[in-house]
Image (tube, rainbow, N blue to C red; front, side, top):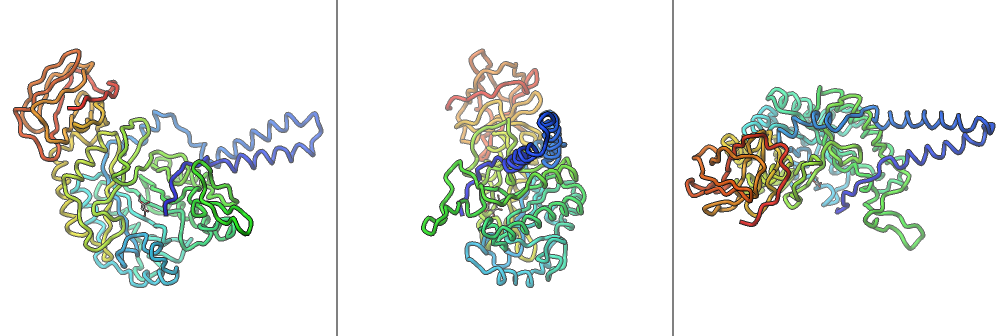
Length: 484
Ligand code: GLC
């Protein structure tokens, strides 16, 4: 289902309702009182709406940067897609792709007894990989809650497993000193109202009720949550991303780009946003539920995109080509994963790498092994990734760059020649070296910075050249690098 992820003017409906309220009030008031009363009504309504929208939570861009500073510094996290879909082992969309009837699919919950579920082991694996945070699917589109919920009977606590996996996961991740994230899908395939939000309005509203209550549960019952990672809460996903055009012949039509869903149903994300900010003002939220977002998602390697140090973003992708577990999925080669991590950091993004544990709860050993190797690389080169920002040299055919304080790291991702020529820097370079290796000769002029590479052995994966400057690199504007 390719529904696109167009952003939605989320509070459109609320504004329409407020306007309606205003004109109704005008009928019953004496003329001279209309203006002051209207002003009062408008002010009260706007205050109420602002509170409902969570706008009582406001922060400056500096405060926002401070709130997400740990996340920016972390740079690398583990995504975990795990649920009853692991049992058939054909990915987390299996119910949809194979059109398995809801009741039949639900039977998987009777078999879900993951005997080797060990969240301490998951956290240890993430830590060994050099990851600093984890994001686990609390509930995916199939509607199976991996936690105790009063809003649903289709949960891991009320079925065979009899276990609150979110509770155990959160506890283990915290204990390991990592930051805790939860993935949550507002949409639920069990509800026809998701597909037909107008025809099945009551049903869609029941789905919304579940969403609102469950977000409240997730943010109330498990202590501090650091990341709330929504997926499928976009208003424009409703109704298969199309509209009922009316009439007996026109039927359903795909919504053209730029046109939004305008049916009767609303997720009322503004209320959820207010709940989020009331319960856990610090939590970092992505943009997939059409509410004010702390960061944006780029999904899949092909979405790597360009350098952006203004809007916080995270690239998520898989370690073995699948989100939910599939048997014999080939693990990606080390070089490619590390180069992707470096490419993301050099574009100033975060990298969330997915593993899908098996039905018994274990992460496939070849994936654990690869994660360990990634961690070994980071053990040696981590200073050029963690707590850095992308730039100032923009990505190019040479590779990328990262910086922190008065240090710039030039990541040469192709087999390097005997020198690299970079644009001039407004700051004096005092030393150049290969990270954890020998010193390099360099020449700095008003035109360029030329670094001789002949005296060191190039790395297969990433030759990291460390430039130490006389002053901080913070204020240096991003600059393009000529082809090498
Ligand atoms: C895609 C998949 C979904 C997965 C998500 C993670 O949207 O369809 O199943 O959870 O990627 O970003």
